[in-house]
Figure (cartoon, rainbow, N blue to C red):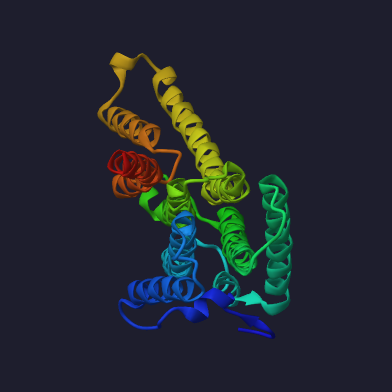
Amino acid sequence: MAGKNILIWPHYLVFPFRYGHVLTFIVLLLGLLTLFKLVGALESQDLDAAPLFFSFLIAYIIPASHFINRQQLCAFDDLKPVLQMTEAGLHEIRDSLNYVPARTQLIYLLAGSIAGCLQNIILVVTSELSSLNYLDWFFMMVTIFLWCLMSTVISALNSNALRFGELAARTTIDLLAPRQLNPYAQVAVYSTLALIGAQASFPLLFLEDDFNEIAILPGFFAIFIPMIFIFLVPLLPVRRRVKVQKRQSLEQIQARIERITQAKNQFDLDAEQLGQLHALLNLRAEIAKVPEWPFDSPVIVRLLIYLIIPPLTWVGAALIERMVDSLSL
């Protein structure tokens, strides 16, 4: 680590021991709910959903981003054998995945503060409030904090995704050992986990009686769009390289097959030529089966599980809302 490069500030809040991520989530969730209780935000029926949303999202995103950063570092370590880089270069890239300059983090915080203030202004204008009480101001401050937190986490994920995308140009592609490229898929899948979980918290706001769609749209799209970017950026460059090398290899194999078969009648080939032809045909079949995307079955299953989390939470929120409405009748 050089200069003023440090961990992103949310990661300093995670307990650095086994099961620290889970304990951090529990402590933050209970602590935040207690804070909302102390300021009186849980006393009002209409505000119960908002404290739950803020508490869950903040408590989730901090340990989740730290966990994903650890997974990114593990994926990079798994890629080292196929990276054409010096030890110094590998060390520099690994540090850049883990540490972010303090000045850059201040920019993230400034951007988050501006975005949070803009959302607060939009909410005040659309709500047509004649005056703001202390709870309104408290929720505005929490909103700004959440935007600062999310801007830091998402920016760090974007930055790391770009670094993995750049590594594709320095990766040795062995079409007969495609599993060596699986860390790229792991990075893409794990990186989207934090944002998928964040999206899963938005249905909590549906439980409010005076639910305002404008309250979630900026945050929803601010998470959804980077999520697509973070997923594709580590994958597209390596897929492009695999696709090109696969096409070139198949062309070379086909050219060798044609040289053998065109030299004489196929039925007049001797034993050595038949052996070479058989080997080339088998190799062509194996190369043709190589997937262009660096996924294997476990990674695909994990991705599918992650993708069904948001729909399940939306359905769950709708069912809870219907149940509450039926009980109140």
